[in-house]
Image: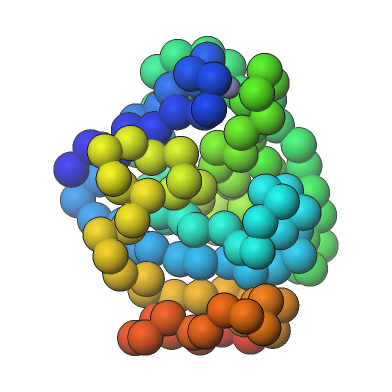
Length: 137
Ligand SMILES: [Zn+2]
Ligand SMILES: [Zn+2]
């Protein structure tokens, strides 16, 4: 399948050709700060599969709990959160699913795993069937 997505203003577009992807929610406080939301929803794809097809994202390096760098890519014009590249997952890219087109933000209606459930807002319930990780990995 081909996943396509963009930022809110449309300056940045991207696509990823993948056979399948891992769907993951992350409730860590960095994800909350970065998006202004309670969590991020992610399509985790092979890093080589993601192509930026329009524009040039900006990036910001945050240091994760591991002490390794989590590189955050965003639109320099509208600020939309696009994807992250974690040093600890060197061959993966975490596309922020809210940017995906054609209803793919729904992640096919399934969540494989939830990270940092220790920081999950108390008004949210665990997703049925999703592996529950207190932190990462
Ligand atoms: Zn934009
Ligand atoms: Zn996170």
